[in-house]
Amino acid sequence: MTTSSSPSLLDQLVQVAPREVSGSRSSNRSDYQKSWAFCLLLKLHKTGQHYLVLFDYHDDVVVLDSAANPTAMDFYQVKTKKCGNWTATLLLKREKGANDEPLNSIPGKMYSNKIAFPTTAKTSGCMATCKASPVQPFKKLKDWNSRLWENPHMQTSNWMGNNGEARSRPKHQ
Image (cartoon, rainbow, N blue to C red; front, side, top):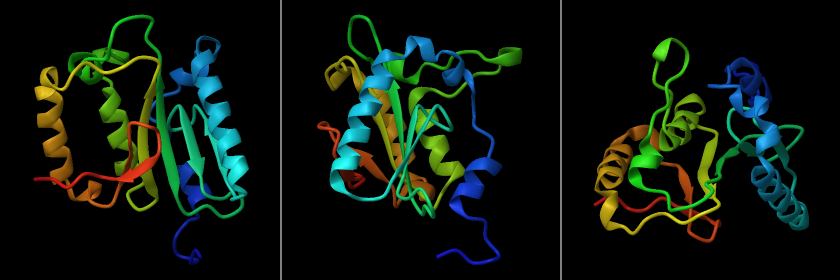
């Protein structure tokens, strides 16, 4: 239930500018993204629960818990790679944007959703066409992950498990 003093989640989605619009411009290259999202849509529909799926708005795929009065969102990055594995270097790579400003890395994009929607962003996941490299090469990512969990904004978020099912974030040790 929303109060008159706070905007609804739908209003917030419109008020907060998306971090980028390149996803919608390059939709002709996103067959995997569309196929993955369609499978997710079928899975959501099968549950009988209310939902609303957004494409290329704030993230590759966003799922709201209701079309009429949403209170929570799940964000998904859907990535393709022709060959090879995802490595920490590739995951953390920051492309250059306008005026050579560095854009967010893949984890940075995921984290930015939690910053933009601290109380309503419940899940942030990354789906990909290929595997990640073995754990040893991920020291840089492990260090980033440790710092991420120390951030109070991330204390209540959920993340995706290896099988795509939502799970609680791991305990930081």
